[in-house]
Image (tube, rainbow, N blue to C red; front, side, top):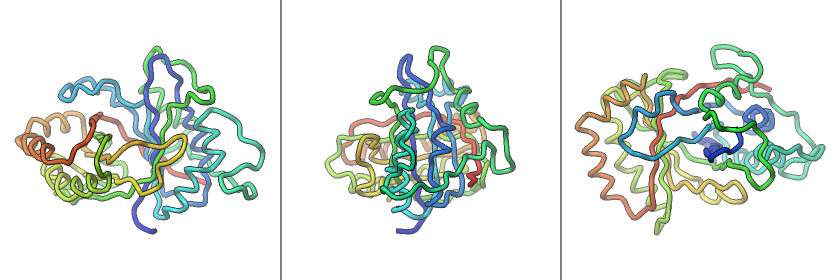
Length: 277
């Protein structure tokens, strides 16, 4: 299956929990799926200004790995070295998800798409969003706060689209069950809601992430029914858009959704990293 897809890793914030070792994750991602880039999201330093939704503290980090080959993305998600990185463990020599010989590992160039940055920039980005009571990374086995899933990306046209590192502020929304029919919920959502989101003043991008069937299984399965990102140039632009009449349209449309459990809305700061080999 080809097309615009992403393997998404989300690290949930827990009281006094560990910090995510994103540099280890970046080094463990196999080269087979041909990543174009990593998008790393951390809580916006002014996320407290958005009190409209009252969803509490945002995730510590979201890592999006973009590719166009779903089987390769699923293989990457299930790779033993990636699992070891998520758990803070060292994998056995030569271990991988398919039982074959060890492949050369890429290293996340700790740098944005415009050029390389010093090693550890992924962790530095995450630390900028960490709470003071967070403890050093390295969660014990069975206590990982990571979740992962493969998503199909649906992009809604907007009047002034962004490119690359433009529009670094993203309102990241997750919808969770229970739902009666996950596929029907996603289909209903994508058919109408993004068109309204695209009318928000100042919006630079609207992306819907639809879970790929059977790709969200196992220990780190992401329970998200659908997620979206609405991107802006600044926090001020995001807040201004939510004061527009479009917000009332969005709320009215939400009432037409099939039954679901809950949703969360977090303003995140996005940074793009080149993916090297």
